[in-house]
Image (cartoon, rainbow, N blue to C red; front, side, top):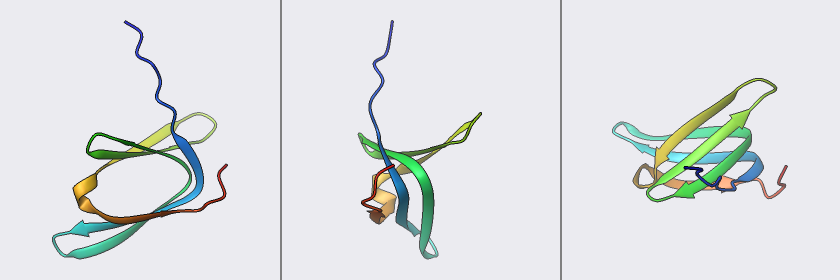
Length: 71
């Protein structure tokens, strides 16, 4: 079975404010792709040989901001 690839959007910078038990923390990702699916936000960053991904539950995200300049 071939699974269709879902297109994500690439941004120069993505900033998240996350809710933690001890308060709030700010997380930044540069030159990354963002995809919201179901109850999750998936952020991936690629270099020449590797791809790294982070998965966040939407209920843990207080807010997010993207640089409007897409890459």
